Length: 521
Image (cartoon, rainbow, N blue to C red; front, side):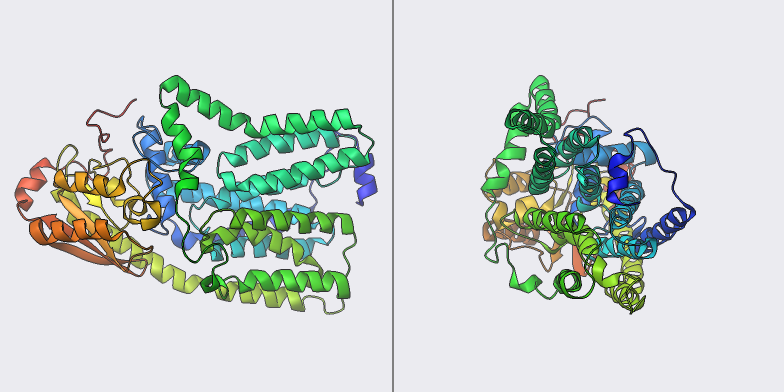
């Protein structure tokens, strides 16, 4: 069906998916599961989602983000993890299943958008490329990109054709979705602005006057900030607005940028596959196989630039941020992988094979298996020496998930190790970072966890405090390899196993809040 026919279709019309669409959906589901199933149950699959999961799990026991446990991500992200744990329990599989579902939804939207300019086979290849690239760039377990990208794709789907009779209503719905996406990660703002601007452009092209466009722009802005305003009002009602405000809108700008900055030369090789897809797609579009609808392809290109702005917005850019570019790359490369060209299936097959090679599923399976064993080994060694109200575990560097699996009390609300060891965070926590480490050590944790090598540049003063405390009061307890790092647990010398076991709590029981009060129910 061409664009003109879509435009004439009544707003209430619904086209039943054809048999080919169902086959495509089944194939995409297989690809999504294949690229993610190896990580199912691996609680230490990556770094960030361990924190998101812990905060979400604590929310199911009454704790508030930014108050009892701290991070700077929006409340909506933690609510997603809380929902997953509420449904499926405290384990990693809870959010991994939800991440698998959202990755599949994203692949379906890539397929649907690609169908505007290519056939079903090519669109299916594009959806598969998206799923593979998402996993390749770190969103294989529970990263933010796998949750907000499907929303961006849904927004794009809603505003893609401003000639529809219901285009204005669809744009309003898109902006409401954008407000939800901002509650997952604020850096999607450039994408929201681009999609909103495109919707306003469509209104102008269909004859809307300046006053009507201004009214729409105001409505778009209100819808975009509404979820965040609602969360802010809730925190004001609960008496914790200051904590919410600092974590969400101050700490981001207080974090020091890394010397490498946004355009990190050490990432150039890693992002070459994405860059190659964009180059091949644009070359084919202009020289070999022009898209059948340049307006739609131009929309994809403009969205790609806004997605790149999302990647580069923070002062320090990490490789997993580039998962944001997975969907744009899969759409831009469409003219090259179009199976209706004289070379037929050759480019599509070559790119799929190359993507499958890069994602390295056999290697991922081996690593995930070893990480699960190592996490269980550390949990079993640490749990007898930590308790629910005393001798807390302190993870200076290592897997955050150990706070949950060992049943320990929390020594601080800054449970993510990076927040108290990273030199770039020294001004971004609202407290004196070194003084907080000193306070934790003064309370004599039952076990301290360290890691080698460090992931980030660590603050020398904090390292000295840890090294001095370990040398004075601790002995090695257990060492295991997790994600290619040697994780060492150090137990306090005066703790005997028999004494500790009598005080320890069940390994998966929720620990009390850092204030010593019971979690709110």
